[in-house]
Amino acid sequence: MAYVHPRFDAIRATDPEVADLVVAEAEREAGAIRLIASENYASEAVMAATGSVFTNKYSEGYAGKRYYEGQRVVDQVETLAIERAKALFGAEHANVQPYSGSPANLAVYLAFAEPGDTIMGMSLAAGGHLTHGHKVSATGKWFDAVGYGVRKETGRIDLDDVRELALEHRPKILFCGGTAVPRTIDFAGFAEIAAEVDALLVADIAHIAGLVAGGAHPSPIGHAPVVMTTTHKSLRGPRGAMILTDADHASAIDKAVFPGLQGGPHNHTTAAIAVALSEASTDEFAEYAHRIVTNARALGEVLAERGLDLVSGGTDNHLLLVDLTPTAIGGKPAAQALDRAGIVCNYNAVPFDPKPPFNPSGLRLGTPAVTSRGMGPDEMAAIGNWIVDVVEADGDDEVEQRVRNEVTDLVGSFPAPGITL
Ligand code: DSN
Image: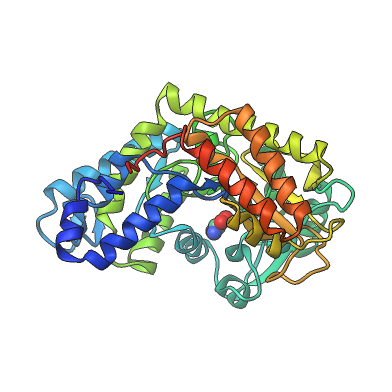
């Protein structure tokens, strides 16, 4: 099979070994049902911009204030990305230079906290992110980190609990958002708490940025003065990140990103972010964002009907967290069995997980990528049934092979954007 990509022939001519790996990955991505909640299919235009000549240029600084010459074009592309980000999200300021989500969050800390300060975020075990203060992360080592979780009975964040913890610890920065939160984030509620304890509210919308852009999740703008997002998850851009702020927090963020934390921005990524933001500003993208949620709900309904436990009972957004505690199979073997059957997801801790993080009790499933392929509720029903078949089969080869064959039939009818095989 030939993989057709604007620059693919050049890879083949120069480095057949890498060319073979590109083909293998393209085949893997096109041939599987990809349910990793943080992944997607970038468009061909986004990938072409990522592979463009902007990769050749150094440009430390910001438009009009660079440390190298030859910035006439880079200044335009970065300004274009910034203006598109501001327009799409309604923000007063945007920094599009962070290399990815973790460096972007580090820039937020560098801008607004000192080592030893108290910071507060959702604990990783409950659905947060390493950089929200986990003990193995720099953010947990350099700051006095306090983590909030979810209520055991509901699987949901309880803002009264968050308030109580915030009043007790008085954090300088309060993070909301996470990586395994299946419910709507109440940005207004978090903003009230932040105001009560005089904390800076930071919304990490990496997972839901595409939903926010498309109007399928409330926006944090106007509630959180600082908003961080990656650009490659539901937003469907290249691997990168942005920090959106109000006017008051703009200059501190810009200084923290450069020269505080990073060197030269990845201009090829900036160009691709500009392309992705243009794509995300269309009616078609807004419809896509809503279909992501419809699909996640449809998938959740089948899983629940077939007897699987969903943390919080379902979803409001793009992801589902399946609690396999009551089943015979753990999260990790279940994820491995599903991968063998052509359904790619990740094992994940569930709140109050009795098992360790490397072998936890949950599966995290997300619908951004399958929705990009044009799949809808009927396909979600089929996928949900296959997931339960494989989980219940607990390693049975025949079931996995049967599902693998059915997956192959299904994906053949839904071309993967950006991949031509
Ligand atoms: N690795 C990302 C995710 O899967 O959610 C978070 O950084």
